[in-house]
Amino acid sequence: MKDAALPMPTQRVPATPLWRHPLARPLAALALLLAVAAVFVPGFFHLEIKDSHLYGSLVDILNRAAPLMLAALGMTLVIATRGIDVSVGAVVAIAGTVACVLVGSHGLAIAFAAALGAALLCGLWNGLLVSVLGLQPIIATLILMVAGRGLAQLLTDGQIITVYEPASFFWLGAGHLLGLPVSIFVVALVAGLTALLMSRTALGLFIQTVGINPVAARLAGVRTAAIVFFVYVYCSLGAGLAGLMISSNIKSADANNAGLLLELDAILAVTLGGGQLSGGKFSLAGSLIGALIIQTLTSTIYAMGVPPQVTMVVKAVVVFAVCISQSSFWSRKSA
Image 1 (cartoon, rainbow, N blue to C red):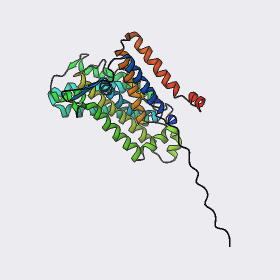
Image 2 (cartoon, one colour):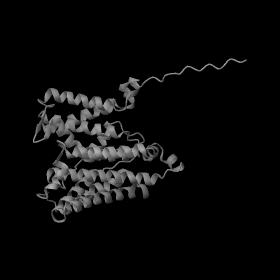
Image 3 (cartoon, one colour):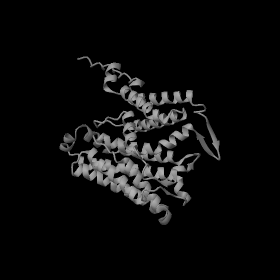
Image 4 (cartoon, rainbow, N blue to C red):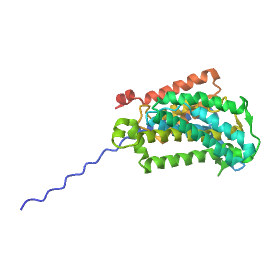
């Protein structure tokens, strides 16, 4: 009688060290910035409740980073498909302008719907140029970057439009819910829905596949043009919501400055969060952390009284250091 086969011993897969986690370095950079702020900015971590609302530097950072977070979420998906969208700031200006022009005469619902509709049209335009006509993403979105802000300035005749009523218009950008700014809940809702869409459907896998190898994805039956079209529409809708949030917060439409260079900060946020400009790899959580890094750095620099002419240099040095820490060269050295 043959001996029964002995069970093979199970080999335990070694756990991945925490410092190897994709979010470890962005979180470490954010923690370091917060530590520096705590040392050089008195009362940085101080929180207090006034009129049932929570106030403090940390709450301000979250509130001010909200529009950038919305833009970064959309930019994450665009970059994951090897694309880029430099029209985000112009879409912010268009959406905010449309809302402020219409809210006084047509009401809040129509103003918000028209603003998001304008952002949707911008996304459809970008998606058409990139996915259907085959233009290079940076060229296609550069057209809207220039023309879009010009259109917003035409709508306002180059002036700043101030909104005095209805008071409900100010709730999105300056209102509070459960003691916290409404903008934080809006970002949490959009981020949660996006994460569910990416993880619970095949869309996230399709986006990664298109970013890694669009030719192979197309041969495998993935509708690459539809995926690329979707991400540009989604990015513009996020920028439109950010434009509504900004105009609601400042109670006006400034077509000249609203969302100016926001697209560059959104690209930086994606990069700081571990996203690859070559496409494929993306992290929604990492992009949100990247946006917090940028806003924390900006708020800390201003609070420390650094001269404006030095601010951009300090910001560039810190961003450069974080990006180098996530580069493949550094990863090989630390392996």
